[in-house]
Image (cartoon, rainbow, N blue to C red; front, top):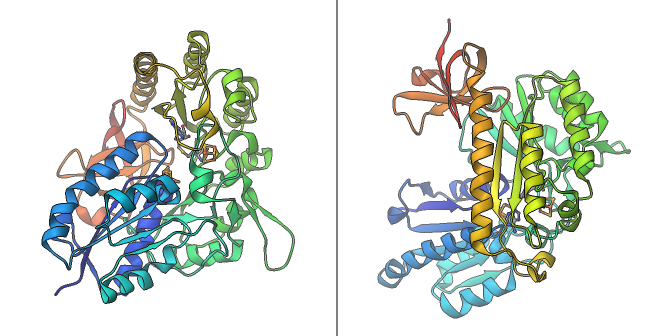
Length: 442
Ligand code: SAH
Ligand code: SF4
Ligand code: F3S
């Protein structure tokens, strides 16, 4: 029987990168990726628990696999990722989905090949969840989604315990990789054709590497070390917590050409009182001051954010403060979320939960404002020539290529497939709400 697999990823870039590692491990085991879940012998669902709809999508997809599992004993169903770090999910899987073959968590991905072999050999199910991260495992393979750009973890976990957020419980405490290990990985990636890296961490600003020769390597130091790698042209990172954004990093934005002039700086709310109740450790004025400093140092910087509406107790006035902050900052784009209570987080226990219809009404007002600003900002790009890394064929527009500008704007343009992986100069012909249209200039 041919060994084939299919992975579905429900979560963030970190989750996506875990899927790339799982795919790399399966490659090494002689498995072949297939585009259609129906055709795969091994199916992996890599879950996210950040909001309720991610949970729901997972159980919906899992339910669809039952019939095939019953009919085909060689079919292997694996589930992993953040949801598996929550005991109530494991309990549900055990009682309602006993036919799932393999369950593992976020801390033991490297154990996957051994666990899968056990499942296949013993025809019995395996559940292995580690409560903590332990030592960082280096040297894992990865099968990248893109040839020319790569996701690179610089740290794992989160210590911030924002009161709404499940991530510290599913990813454990902060652990930073050694700078030498990160540089080595990126050198190997560039030798394999990578031009752009996205450095990943829940809060990259609190990266604290311990170099071999002693001392401490800050996040800003790490960027400078990475920038020395020949062949690497662009460095990005995600995500940056405002409370730890240093002046040193702002200087690196201004001085380091390879660091893309774009930052994702989640604000979550425009109200200092709500920020406090979210345990964010900054207030509205401090946040706006950071934005001012960033723009002073790098006038062309593009800025995006995450915003939650309907945090418990949020009043109409406090929501209005979010709208006014968005108008003041004028984000290039913003991810907006309805507050979703997560089991085990302090905010889920708060008495004043906001009714769904109020959340939705606020959400719609916010999205309208955010989108109108994005559209205005993007339309101002018309006529500009932008350097774009052609990443692949456009999803929306068959026959076209797509790629990102230095400022992380998505651009669609006509071009031959052999340009994929290369930088091209593109003149912007139209700015839409979520993307730009352009044509290659010679
Ligand atoms: N570490 C990143 C965010 C990771 S989660 C950071 O601190 O910026 C991505 C986003 O999901 C968060 O920024 C937040 O806006 C949103 N989010 C997290 N928990 C949520 C919840 N319970 N309900 C709604 N949105 C949530
Ligand atoms: Fe969640 Fe806050 Fe950590 Fe981000 S910083 S992962 S929002 S607890
Ligand atoms: Fe990412 Fe979702 Fe986990 S956002 S860290 S996959 S809870």
